[in-house]
Image (cartoon, helix red, strand yellow):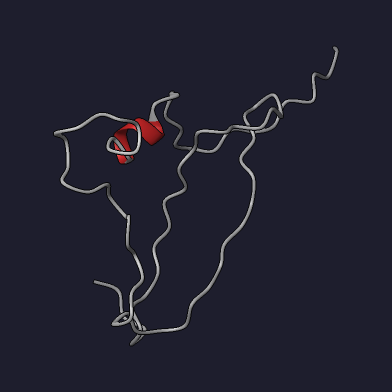
Length: 83
């Protein structure tokens, strides 16, 4: 049996590519969906807590780079609490 070198898929994957259109329609010249794109300003002068930077790359099951992906993360607030 030939091994193809495929990567294991994660439990939850959504087909696309449409992620950036759904989350940033104004940026994609689709008006009338949101007044401003979601997440356009996630941090401002009133935001409490330590700033972190998360970096990485997303690959599909065949090992090809996915250029239109979203990673959903959850973190505690500045007091260490989750809603």
